Image 1: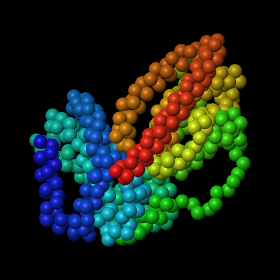
Image 2: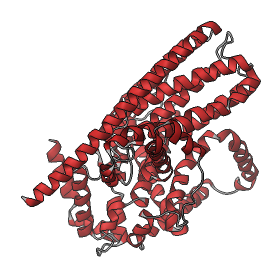
Image 3: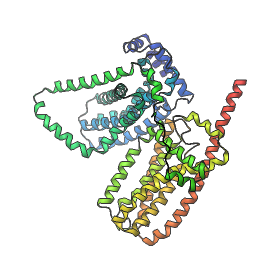
Image 4: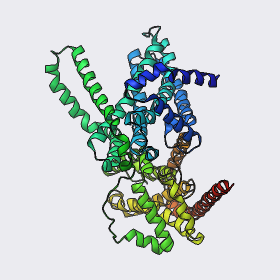
Length: 546
């Protein structure tokens, strides 16, 4: 049945009538479908995994989770009989919020890092045809997520008092229209960026754009009052303008902006592909003395350990896929951490006080950030360059693994908490602050050891896989539950100084042993994946000889 439906849809899309629609937008239908078949084949062969819209299994899992959540939410709101306008507004806002982050990330990854476009730059393909085929997967994202989030509410909304009989069509139509308009707007935004920003700075600009909506959301208390005041100041003159005129003006401005942005993608896009993919600073790297590097070389595996430290540190700053994936969650942890520090400065009691202190959350927030960072550490843009590690001596891999661990432990676990020690001493005194910092470092070190075990192979040595990212959602939910339990246990432990003083050495020793075991497991994973890489290359030459 599913295969028959696909055949019918495919026959309709490849019909002469639809080809005329494509031609009206400047898209060559023949080359468009050649590119669509090429991208589908690459996705099927798992050579093109970095785009969520081309991974149907990942989309189904994510949409299924949202569908289950929407059933529970819509049933609850129908039981409360909330007003129909509020019901549809809640789901429309949530749908657009979820889609905004996903579509911005997917559009940036498709347009700004088009690695496969290098092989097509010499072909007679215009920019509209290539970008049309490249961005078609955004339509699947909109359909799956709009369906998962709004299918159940559109049916359940019929049972609201004010809902008409055609409410399901109204609800789903509004959500789908909003999703499609948002997708076009995201494409238009990046079209304007390509028109304004130089190609070599485009990657940095797009990552800034991806962070803007989240930053605005987290800082809404700062700019919302100013926005409301500005609206009130212009409300007087606007009251004499008809509402339909205002709506027409807003629609005209938005439509013109989106259309001009989309037309920017169809100019000389493929000509700029090489500059975008290989963009970077042309300044020579200055050799500077590194205190952390010398510390790692002395205590974390010698020169091979420092190589692992510097490799991981530099790739974290440069790799497109790592920065793109981390951008979706790290700002959240930064704002939460800043909020906790602000609470500690203003009103937080000591962790040993009778009441609950926000400081109890700090080690676990940092720990979950480390878990998330380790999940993304194994994926990178230049994963095909992993063969370089085949020439590394086997005896150096153990120390290299220690250096990778040090690149996470020193900058993200030890140094931030040492910097906050002065703040803790000022608020709680030397004894309470010292015990809490030592306990926190030991706890976060255990989180990092757990996360390091999830890194398969050399860091940045695998192609991003949205399917695995979709499966991580349940893991993150389970991690939140376990962290909540750990916070409760920690609060009970900190009721007594003596209990903490006894447990800190035990937790420290356990963390040290577990970290050593995790580093050994990480080293074995590196060896195993390099062996697979070596075997794959030998198999390739065997097939060519045959």
